[in-house]
Length: 251
Image 1 (cartoon, rainbow, N blue to C red):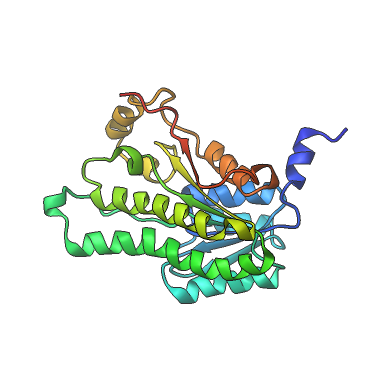
Image 2: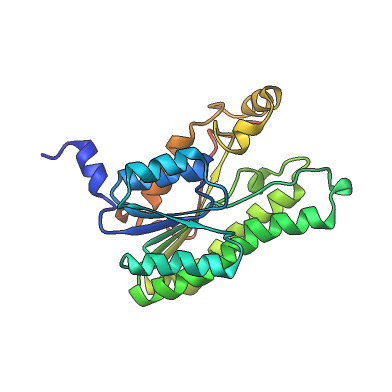
């Protein structure tokens, strides 16, 4: 019998997965999880962390870097073109996101528009271009990285919460339009993690927010593993769903 780790390393073999916002944080950890499970991975980034370059050096034939702004069509085309060169695009993980936090009355139009551009328009642009290939294949997995704030809100993050909630509506519409073509569309909504936005919070803020969850601060690598699961064959019947990976919000 195969060892569990060996079986896990094979589950995405032969598949090509792309992830936006893979330069650091959860995106980087997701790229690593996909690689560990045998996928060819296209990692989109704007400013790659040294860790991403180190990961590429460790997987030179399996990790492919595409630089650029994922909210702009040339970058989305480049991601899909690279995937086609590798044999297709089986999973797209839209992770690219920014914050511009302020109380709503102090929030500028520019703050609102830029968060919407990166977080929501980026998902639309990348989905639009990915679907061309996925429809041809009659197979695809679209995974949108949302946030628990899309479901419960957060003071000072009206733009971010709205952009992430928009991903839920986008995912549901895509599922209804393209499920018959073998395409599945899902959302994962993480809570406070030890990477990314959670890592950049002050210790006081992170402790306060973590105190509202049953399990405290989450391990980004466990969420990355859940994302990789959604990209694989065992999740073929998961569709039009929101997976809350938040440790259990407790009010």
